[in-house]
Length: 103
Image 1: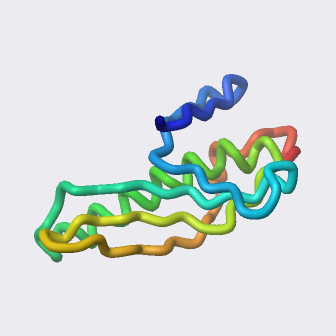
Image 2 (image 1 turned 180 degrees about the vertical axis):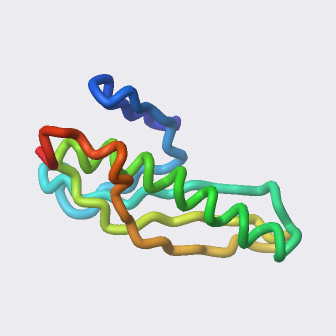
């Protein structure tokens, strides 16, 4: 089941494929993971990966606005025969950071 995350005040929402908690849930540390099976062409994949990174940073910003620490973002890409793991550093999206700051 994909969790739905929202920040109604900022007009943000999204479905996360896998939200992995690191340590105890009260620590509010997470890894956001997404699974992609679409693009196999390596040249096009590099462009798509940038789009997916923005998508996951958007989700991360929602959680960041509620005091979560985003340990990393991970895109899993099916490459015809196996899953490839792409780890992306979280960067909050400035236009969506809550005016209240990181709670």
